[in-house]
Every structure is written in C-alpha cells, then in structure tokens.
Amino acid sequence: MESIALQLLLPFAVGQCLRPWIGSFLQRYKSVISLVDRGSILLVVYDAFSEGMAAGIWSQVTVSDLVMVVLLDMALLAAVLAITTIVSRRLGFSKEDEIVIVFCGSKKSLASGIPMANILFPGQALGLIVLPLMLFHQIQLFACATLAQRYARRPVEARPEPEPRTVLGSAEA
Image (cartoon, rainbow, N blue to C red):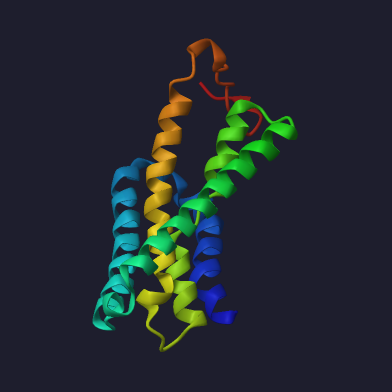
C-alpha cells in the first residue's frame, strides 16, 4: 500500500497542492504538457509490453485465450457502460452529467494500472498480468470514441447553453 501511495497518490496530491501556483503555467503550455503526459503513459505501456515480450507471453497465450480475454473485456465494458447510463438516468442527472458519468465510470488507466500491478506482483511476468488491461484499454478507446460521436450528433436544441463559469464569485468573461 505504501508503494502504491508513493507512486500514484503522492504525485497526484502534490500536483493538486501546487496547482494554485503552477496552474496558469500549465494552461499556457497545455499542448506541451499534454504531449509529455501522453508520452509518459506510452513509455509505461511500452515497458510493460516489452517485459511481456521478453518473458515470452505470446508463447503462453493461445489464440483462443486471447479471443476469450477480448470477449470478457468487451462484456465488462458493455456492462459498466450500461450500468452507469441506467443509474445516471434513474438518479435524474442531466444529459451532460450522464455523459461525464458514463465516460468516467468506465475508465481504467494503464498509467495507474501498470504501476499497481508492478507493486502487487513484483518479479512476475507483468506483461501477462496486464494483458487484459491493455486490451480493455484499446477496446474502451474505440467504444468511447463511438459513444462520443453519438453524443455529439445530438440535435443542437437538445444541448443546453453553457452556463457562465465563476471564479471567486465573479462571472468569467
């Protein structure tokens, strides 16, 4: 638990604490920060995938095993998307809140999943352990891109006008 907290929670907490002082800098260089963020996630995934290749996971996983994992990942994602949609509607959330709930409810990040697997299963063939997560992530990207396009095609009159955001009690221009 300590290792997970140090690798995942501490950087998050430090970033949130520093946001008042570095937030404007981050906004100014958002594209560069985004590139670094995505690059670091790509390196984490590449490292796990490389470890799996070196450990020979593809010789341990049959095509039928791979198909089964993909089908189970798809079923899990479909269940989570359906449950979050139904629950958000039953609780009376607005369409915009429903969209946030649906997209956030299904997110399982490789950026946090791989370090956690590394901590929980030290010395193991990490690639084999996180293979379902890597496949889930790819399936999730395709499914959520399709959902995003569907939500974007809603009629314009069904979309509410954005409310003005407030900063310290005053309306933002």
